[in-house]
Image (cartoon, rainbow, N blue to C red; front, side, top):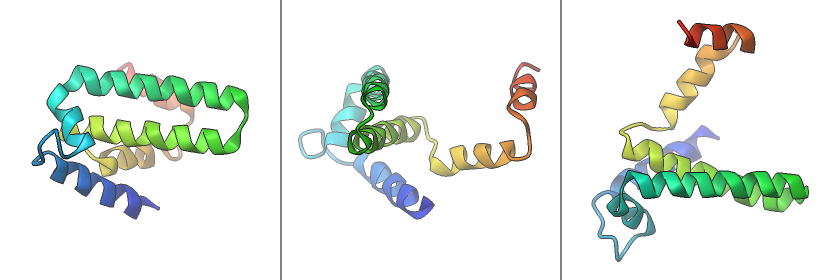
Length: 105
């Protein structure tokens, strides 16, 4: 499944070269980080509302929007899905309590 994330990351990088009137993603980049973060926040809220409603299709749809906009934010910051996946992999075998304690050091 990470191939899909990698393909999307590559497209998001290409969109940095596009003009805002031709690409939604390019328009997000053009509006800047604050606008991108606002979109991530909106999508997170919509995902929570969908989960509260219990409609599985709506949960999937909103989570896809959240992941998409999170990936735009990552790309804007020079990061990609592999960076996040590596961090998740690092956490395997650690309890959540251990992992959280390591962050505060």
